[in-house]
Length: 62
Image 1 (cartoon, one colour):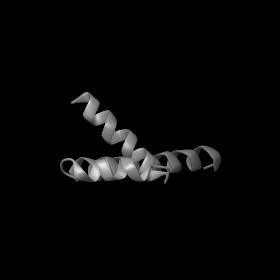
Image 2 (spheres, helix red, strand yellow):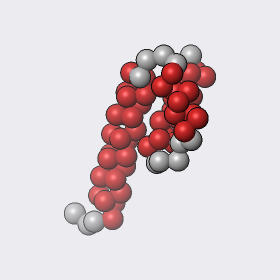
Image 3 (cartoon, rainbow, N blue to C red):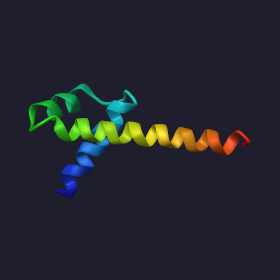
């Protein structure tokens, strides 16, 4: 379970930043359901937005 979560996380992060290899992408899409990758992508996008909001809040005086 943990190994699967780590694999989904690393694959999604690599795809998120555009550095995932074609071989890894094909392996991800050929095994199992795409739902874990979609959910991880939504989670990482939400973390990115929250991090940017926090960073802007720290830089811009209120």
